[in-house]
Amino acid sequence: MATSLVIFGASGDLTRRKLVPALFSLHRKKRLPDDLNIVGFARRPYDEARFRELMRDGIKEFAEDHYADAAWKDFETKLHYVQGDLGTKEDFGTLDARLSELERGASDRLYYFSIAPRFYESTIDLLGSCGMARENGGYRRVIIEKPFGTDLGTARGLNAAVHGVFDESQIYRIDHYLGKETSQNILFSRFANTVFEPLWNRNYIDHVQITVAESVDVGHRAGFYDGTGVLRDMFQNHLLQIMTLVAMEAPSSFNADAVRNEKTKVLAAVRTAGPERLAHDTVRGQYRGYADAEGVASGSETPTFAALKLQIDNWRWQGVPFYLRSGKALAEKVSEILIQFREPPHMMFPLPPGATIRNNYLAICVQPNEGMHLRFEAKVPDTLAELRSVDMEFHYDENFDGIAIPEAYERLLLDGLQGDASLFARSDGIELSWKIIDPILEGWTTPDAPRLEVYERGSWGPKGADALLGGDGRSWMRGCGKH
Ligand code: BG6
Image (cartoon, rainbow, N blue to C red; front, side, top):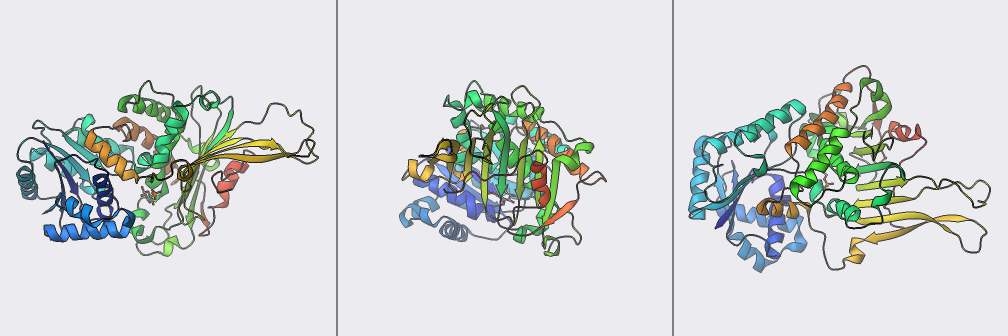
């Protein structure tokens, strides 16, 4: 049976940069279904040859290492293009006719929304009214890019619209952080081993830090970004999803619903920020010069940086703060999770005067230098009782020599084609994430809000971010640097 992957918004950046390079890599690994059509749909007046050429140039530009002429010649025969408008029913008819022609009978279809969110609902409606969501012996699925809504109300509205046409089991809401190899490995580290899990709770963990820092500024996306800000762009999805992987209980199986049930429970247990806590537990910043960029409203208060202190109200995590920070134009591009353990209950060693006890930590290096570092104290040789912090390190490039870490989109596209939704967000998870973010967004418009702090480009964000931890006697740490 034929499979069609339809990319709505095929002329956009994501298609050239990520989707088609990922599909090409899957093709080279022989993981794609045998009879696959990849059909781009967009307004631009390309013919098939031009579309193929553009996609090839995209691979050469963004995934050069993967490119090979012979493989491309084979792959490009799968690529097709239909010109059309997302708001025009007749164009959906044309698309459907072209798909039927390629499929020759019953088929599986995966629709990928790589389009502006304002078109999500109308596209869903047209898929429904044109009969394109009806299964005909094969599946019909839809992958929806982030952002999924801009607050709880719009996310609920969008869920209702999608559920009007597709069943939840047919819906794949993408969060590309979940497709990253190192994010996937969080559950494997925790639940395919016994060394970590007995310590993974309030008895041994002091606090958790999650950093997703970017060195780039908002660049040409300023127009979009100004209406979005860092909480909607990074926290509602990527940071909260990573937090659930760190905090969730062990599911009984590695099945999409079992995994997502546990993640949902974490989100439901996050304490929502009351107005009285906002100034204490949240920090918002904007890099210097942001407000002067083209596309940004003058005097814009859109935060490009945020730091939050969140509490999870359950037995495992009571009293263990989760500090989350993310921002643009920071010193480095790095994503890492730092699990800071408690101090030893009693120090029996006669430490040299002035020496302090350093807590152990486990750092999960999401990107770059993918791996894990476990920091602990060791006795310095030839001293009586001098301690030094040392690291045990695991790095993908050393331990899995010759196996390149795939792009997140490879895993996610393959899972979409194969029907595995474990790495995708479910409707209840999305709505619960907005329930955490909405009160902060709302609170930031009131007099209780922490002030918007300007920070220097290339720094680690505003001073308030340091004070957020400093007030608790802690500080941000980097656990993943090369030592
Ligand atoms: C996207 C955000 O979801 O993630 C971008 O919209 C951000 O603003 C990007 O730059 C970061 O992804 P990665 O994989 O480069 O860390």
